[in-house]
Image (cartoon, rainbow, N blue to C red; front, side, top):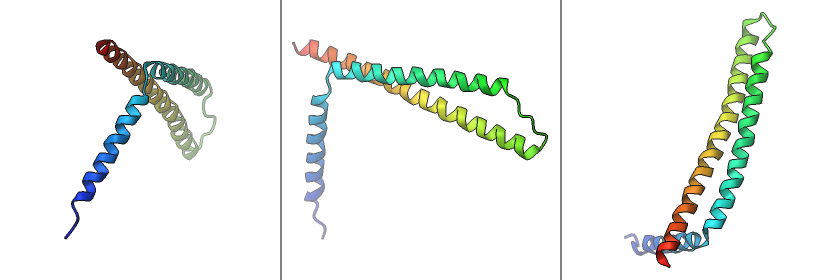
Length: 111
């Protein structure tokens, strides 16, 4: 027979860790982290624009179809990775901003 009391102990430990981590989240921390994440997202956006413009102005000079296909694939992957990083940091910035607003409203309601 299996002991079914162990999962309850784990659940209570997890919920207590979650409560303590939520207590550490303050509006100031959220807004500060959102500004850092937004700054990184903006820098990645500028990098993305630079990469796109560089690729647009420099054409592939080879006549070999394999080289042309590989170049297109590498360019697409580089642009995709930079765009993904921009999107991730942008979404994180928005989420942290909204969390900071939520914590501020909850603090006002408690007072």
